[in-house]
Image 1 (cartoon, helix red, strand yellow):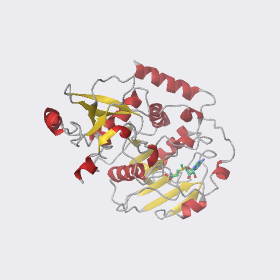
Image 2: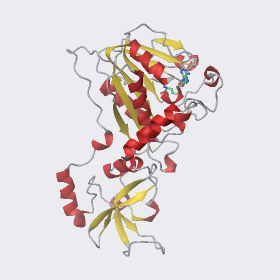
Image 3: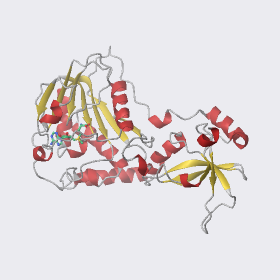
Image 4: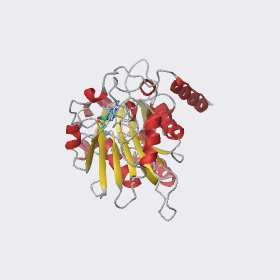
Length: 356
Ligand SMILES: C[S@@+](CC[C@H](N)C(=O)[O-])C[C@H]1O[C@@H](n2cnc3c(N)ncnc32)[C@H](O)[C@@H]1O
């Protein structure tokens, strides 16, 4: 029921006359004219983008259009495209992109029709830029026109943006609603088969990342993709991207085994890592009466990784939980965390240090 309500909200937001207005309506070419040779996501998230492109581009020598391109197209090193056309607004950024075989300056908000012939490309990419399109339905429809039958449009997005240039319906949507929005763009453009999606949320941030000290997990990666109808039936079907956080968890049997041994092993039943002894903070609000608990501090634990997404889906974005073992009651329970550093100050026995 709640899902239906959210769909309606997004549709209502899309119908607002100013849904695609932006705080900064000045010329996009001027705004993007300043070089930004930066990474728009952290290295882990960009690795996911590259990995998923590698999985979904099954053509041997694909013709690729990188829409809203900059200095990096995030293509796997071993992909051998017949061509990569980069379309964007900054000539210098495009000139620094080593994968491009052709560079096109073109403002999609002024002219959503793409300057390419019908049926030219196998793959059209849009990486972390769909939020800036003021006429997305026209652009998506034209992407379908320039794709070959069976070609695929891959739209990646995250939760970071230039807020002054992002359209209102995007800025005001939650992350879950943005997934629906892009779904709507595919659906309503009329040029695609039913879209599929994948998301990677809550992976640990690289240790050398400039925001690692904040304890925030890696930037979320969302992908929505769909093919143009008419695939040659002799071509194999494109594989689906498996959602990351369901790839890692131990199987049910292993979970049961770890759970049965937890009292003696003190290993997390979800990932098998040794849990850390954790001093229960003494405060009038403490809800537990024992002095110590054991908590899994593995930042890649599937219980924690899945938690970011589960909480997000319940409207509690920015929260997850770690697995906590109560040795006196021999029970496991979730303990909420708002970042990867939370609770660490009360670890009393660092397993790494103890083993050294
Ligand atoms: C956040 S950056 C992403 C760049 C690149 N796709 C990447 O993954 O690093 C947004 C890009 O969208 C391009 N862009 C923004 N508005 C555009 C427009 N109206 N028409 C064409 N490109 C646009 C900018 O040139 C900029 O490179």
